[in-house]
Length: 206
Image 1 (cartoon, rainbow, N blue to C red):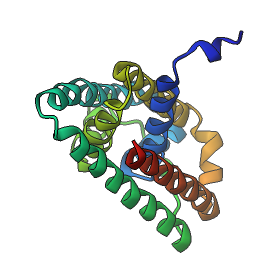
Image 2: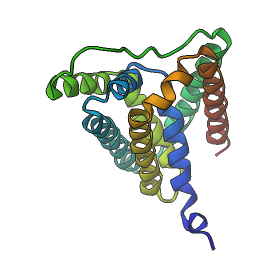
Image 3: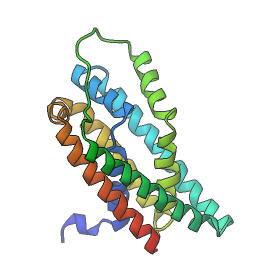
Image 4: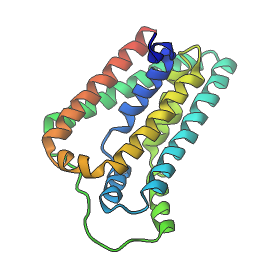
């Protein structure tokens, strides 16, 4: 029996949703890509982004379950609220794909910056972004409560963050030429939009 078939479905669900959410174009991803092209402080940048995500996901998964038990009305409110957010998120991605013209431009040149200012920048891009709290604490936390093993769901989301950031940083030289083209972002935005709508439909049907 393949090892993959022995893993719980919630692990793959958490990985898939976490990966879909983090794929959206943003200042944080552009910064990681730019540093990847420059090959500057890559390990610490990727580790900082992924660890920040892990802490936020853990807060959502652990805190949401307690709130749902204390306030029975809280779970359906957050479930439909999460579905509404996903519908909006998917519509935004599909609209971006229809409009086109999106592309990441990674900076070139320049000397190597000290580590601490670079980490301060990436922390600001992560923790000062209000959408990160919606994606991790609220959305992933609310969806994790729909599973019998929410911690496994959260683990899948954490694994997706580590996978994404280290792949983006160290694979920047391969990704940059592709995603410098607006057409590539259009295809990606369509996939993200359809994924978000599919998840929203499942939430509404629960």
